[in-house]
Image (cartoon, rainbow, N blue to C red; front, top):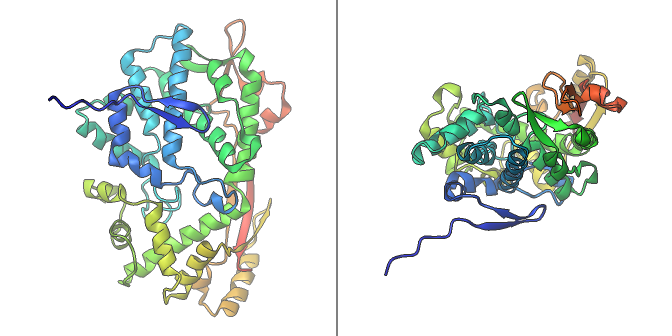
Length: 407
């Protein structure tokens, strides 16, 4: 008897959008691939669950949500007479599905500590090219769109712009899982208002208030969630912790770690030596490797490493002060001297516990404008089309400074 082929046109249930359809068998096979399945083990919001206990959703969740919204956007544009071929449609869904595939464990922490000088976007591209080889070149067009090299600009803008599908999903999703209602945007309405004019992705005038709400929601989500003071402290502790581990590994110290983490601790990885083997090891590295290692490191004899590890595991974090003006060299020095004596650590070691940085919230960048299409068919930047004064204000980046030190 002939073996029945598996059904690849699955339907998934998403807590935000309800049922999500997998549009074709190629996408089903990409989702089934170990590279993509790894995203189930990468949290979307890093350590934000130390502030918002519900924020445990994953990059896997987010990628599927993006693919669902992309299907909606394509249907809306075709309905409005925009020509999008079947090939382009498939490529858009693949490009948005894989846009985050290069994210490392705890999102941005790895980029700043263990895997130096290679951004998650570059790693995403490496994964896509590898998958393209495995799937006989079927991802070629998706890669072109992802890189922004396709001749139809609006298709690239759906993947990456100030009102792209990625943002429409993560704001709504992160707002849902954190319970921060200020971020709850109407992604449906924004998509229904999309159109194309002169090869630019635009929003029809009727959607102007939805765009205003989207920009304000983004600003509020940054201050309230992504740049929340406790999340900032936790993320910086984990970055410092991984830097310390890397430093100990370079001195030849034996450290508990999984084989994937071990590879990145004991090898200097950069842009030039990021080989296929590196990519394979990276695809095996996720939040679980980092967290299980941190649990083990709480009892390491290195005081800096064990203290930082305990802070994360027990949620006993550093104190943080945030202000508009930068902290002076003297203020930082004073704190370093004070805690160096108190913790009985050298000045260099104290830098792991006392540090100062800046944070930036740029809600709207007018260099890459969101264009509003008025009734006469003219295009206008949202900052000029809106009668909301705070939209103009959102074009200026807001910079704040913070200092962290032990309690």
